[in-house]
Length: 108
Length: 207
Image (cartoon, rainbow over all chains, first blue to last red):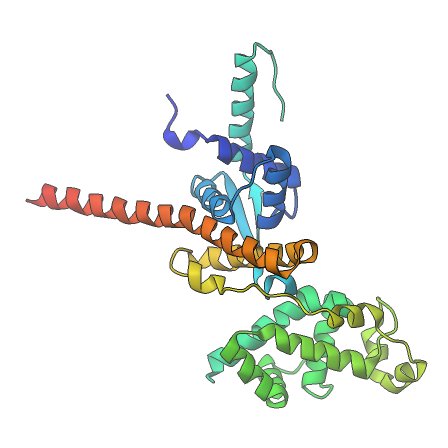
């Protein structure tokens, strides 16, 4: 059996996919927009950041401080990147889903 | 104002100058930073120790720096610098050379070229939300998260402001902040109750 930290919930998976999708320069606002556009549901900033913090604790994403902008009141951005472990989990989740659908291979 | 406060304030200004203000003036970040430093310290070479540089900087802009530290609006000073420098140098084009503009301000002024991008930005002040998010979320956010979360909320506020107008954006902002409180509160309560359970378990183990 897998450990609990090897599992990711539906929203965690969405966040990871959004970071991968946005690519370089993925930060709070861009991740937020990517999820809202793709899933057509409204998410709160709090929900996003608690999830990002949980993913970081699990070692699935890495974050670092970026540059401040005037629109942000001079506050810095925090950029996110999916780690190898995160990508592996995403692939596993996708593989499980495909297996359940009776498909043979999976790629992310 | 302590040295540490001055240092923090100047650090924040430099950071902003490098990152965002430079773009609106139309020079590269390093050029703008160099220009800022020259302006602050009466065109002194960059080899001057940072401590001296900061002293000159603060001496000249001391009232603004003090006011900004008090109100935490360091951006205001950066804007003042920007306006100051643009007015003096009259930067001609986006990739203007710092050396040219530093040595030949009169020539550039004589050309009478207006810095269009900057003027456009300056005419439109950045809208600010009705409530202080920092105050609302302060206890629930970790130090790492504070800048990111509050900055994101402010950035989204500015974007929505253009589409929705002030009243609707203010309502959206208040709702968004309240919605954001719950996940952070849940996390904090979870951590506290976890610690309490651990304490209880340890107490039982000892007795």
